[in-house]
Amino acid sequence: MKTALALFIVATFICFASGKPKYPPLGDFKTQSGKAFKNAKINNVAGDHISIIHEGGISRVYFDDIPKELSKKLGLNKGTVDAAKKEREKAKREAKEQQLLKLKDGPFGLWSGMSVEEANAVGPKRADNQYGKFYKLSKKINSPFPYTHWTIFKKKNSRGFTATFRRLNALFDPKMGLVAIETIGGLPRKESKKKYSEIILSLTKKYGATLVKKNEKVKAITSENELITTIWPTKSRPQGVWDVSVSWREQTGSILGDTITIRYWFVPKKTILDSVAKDEANQKAAEKLKAKDKLNDL
Image 1 (cartoon, rainbow, N blue to C red):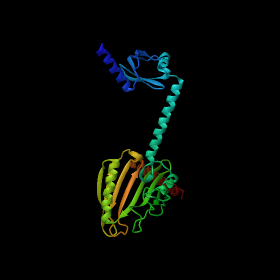
Image 2: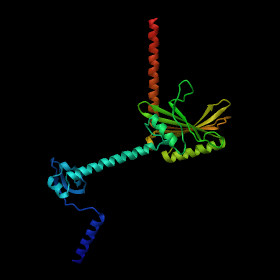
Image 3: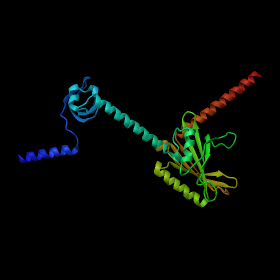
Image 4: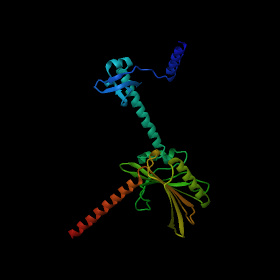
């Protein structure tokens, strides 16, 4: 008798400690729509549905499909259904807001799909790497492909030049908004390679292992200089970043020092370059057709 009483007390304590109420077994349970479940028991009760375990696995049965007598026993009614729906909508909103906050915490405060106006509002507010208004690049001057806008970082160093990053190029698409950015900076030889290594280490911690490192020789005015590029594989990452690469370029005789360039693509790089190539091919074909028509008119 004492043993039975002790077991009952232990079982009651476990049930109380778990905080999960005990529900009566449903047995062979049928919903209002006629769906049948064998050896069913209630696993959880929410405001607008119940979760049941049965021979076929785990299923949810929503309020409209729960037999009215069972709903009454479990305390489910229109009020609990409405409250559950509101709670679910609130959770979705909060999740969406959190996702948006993550996207907005992109490189240099920029994020995928933002407009030029939004980007212009971000730059001056930044404590570090503050930059000015984005200006449209002119095709008549040295316009870096495929970027459409540019701006300058405002922070200066002791030598009067801008700090590690001097310039920020951006590619704004009329339909997709911001799809890529490129930062360009320069440091003296003694500092540049160290800074390049620091950037690689920092981005590897953030975006994972690199894909490949390219070593090239590029033609300079006075000699052939070295160009090293580290690339990360194309994949979806936090802040909407798909492609990342960092380049270090030796600049012999340059007063601005060696060049460090970081490129971020918020849309897969190949998607954009293929689109640009297609547009250029269509434009050339149209010009060729126009020239042919003009020749036929002569």
